[in-house]
Length: 139
Image 1 (cartoon, helix red, strand yellow):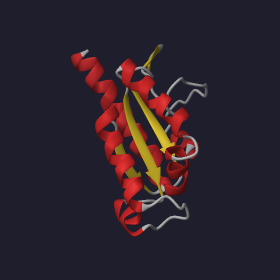
Image 2: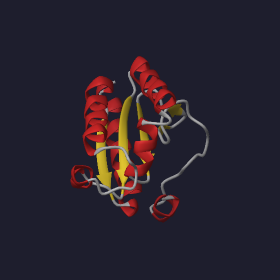
Image 3: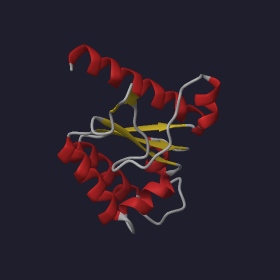
Image 4: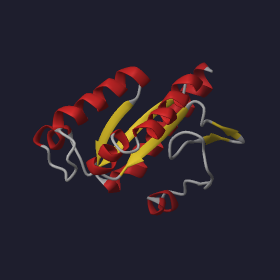
């Protein structure tokens, strides 16, 4: 993913953030309280978050909601069809996974996006671009 950023001359800072995996910065001002991306490599990873790691994962999303942070959950190597058909290794049922994703979309006001790994950096860049544009235009 960093290859796409380097190739497109997008500056990156690596540091820990409280919520999510990635965020943006406008000049010296961090946008991590406004917008973050939580990235999952596949459906098995998100299944693990909704089962074995659910309490920790839920605390992270509760924190984002409390801050008013918009979360984009990007799940690579997957689609809604993969969920419907159970095309993943986890023993989590399709109904349970679907229910968790959809209820969290409502409960925590998150956006779920599926993509190929090679699309992730580009999607993130555009999400952050439009978030920054909205912040500059409308505060």
